[in-house]
Length: 433
Ligand SMILES: [Zn+2]
Image (cartoon, rainbow, N blue to C red; front, side, top):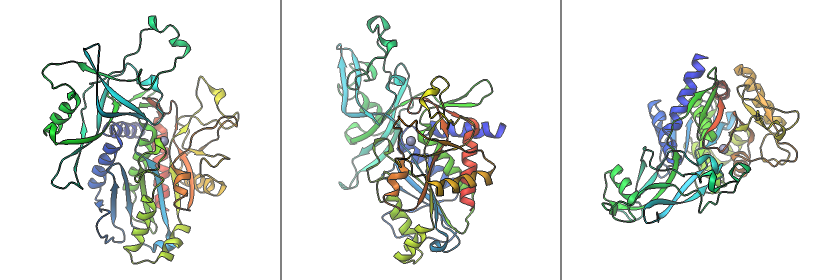
């Protein structure tokens, strides 16, 4: 268990360093740089070498890293693991400050994705994201990441005395009930610039240099290992940073093989994926084609390579809930710490079919890792992943899988310490093929 615990702690550190999709990409870049990967830019000419290790980013919020295979790609194909960098949260609106009672300063926010709203109440929150600054070129403003990294916000609950039905369940209004409180009105600050002043101070720039921002809220408190025997990981954004972490770790551990190994982490999965940096874009498809082009391959070779490729769409799965077991399928009941979960759906909201299921099951067997399955209760709709969306751009075989967790989209999700090691081992085995 000691190694598994250490690795779970690494995941918690990774998530802590990655409060937004932008920071997740930056954290991944740092790790790749330390492991000898070279950055290639979309706008430059690529001269890739066999056995070379590279990465490319999109919009500072999506990233793909790859190890060019030693063989001919059209004969050995691509082995891809896909995940996503974003998580449900709140996005800060432009000119966000609102004064209440002539005294409180709160922030105007918009919900991003599908968080369990009530889990965000009464928790110390902070702000992080990307800030865009004036530069010498109008077309290419400067971008900087910012993380306030202090608990500057909170969304206070309404007292039960004024909210008698709160324990029967009440609806939270997204424009009224979830706005975070930031400060008391303070005469020393120019009105309307409380947040911008804090950001400018953090970045050591003038407020007038800031043109716009992509800022989000996050839970200030770090994740932790919990349980009587240290069996659980309680942490925000495990969906889907745990799969980003696992695929990154596996990619960096495995030396070049015949096939070309790729890990890709898209942004915007939680809001439908249809952005240039999302799964519903040409980002991955163009990347694979460019890997071929840089090796002097033809378009026919590209299609031959795709036909020999395989993708693991890695996103989390629902473990059976200890208090609500009836919400799950009566027979297929995945549990935490019992191994990665293959996700199957008749509606094809997951890409798994018997062929891709068989491939991943065998990989788990070779890795010495237990494997489980998930299906929705037949009268529940369930979620989807980047798998089916990516398949509409890249017609390659694909399996949907993920670690089993509880409380998906809560501000703190619950995963298993053993599962994180199991999943990573299975990814390593896949990249070794
Ligand atoms: Zn997800």
